[in-house]
Length: 148
Image (cartoon, rainbow, N blue to C red):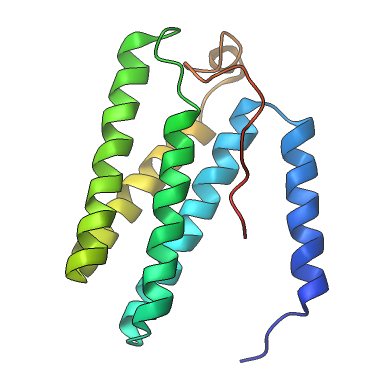
């Protein structure tokens, strides 16, 4: 299996970061979910090939992305939605911690399923649902970007 040249990966990272800076909060959330899915799929692949160090790195990356998702929430804007998402993200982080410690691939599969469901929900918001505060997201600029 050939590996893409590093400069292409770097270009895609720069392009994605530029899109995030010029886009809205929803675009940032969608990119975080995309990166979370990628990290979880990588962890699954590394686990099936017994590449435990790489699996651990992928799970750690997924946990950092979930922490980033938690930081985007603004519970004061929509308390019920914000607190529900905070609890769900906390649960997902706890399941990934469990997966890391116990090498539990079922926990990774569970979080991947939740990730896909949440990602689809964010993608399917209508334009009118996106406008007022974008579902309790913080209005500040993102404080970090998930690395590729």
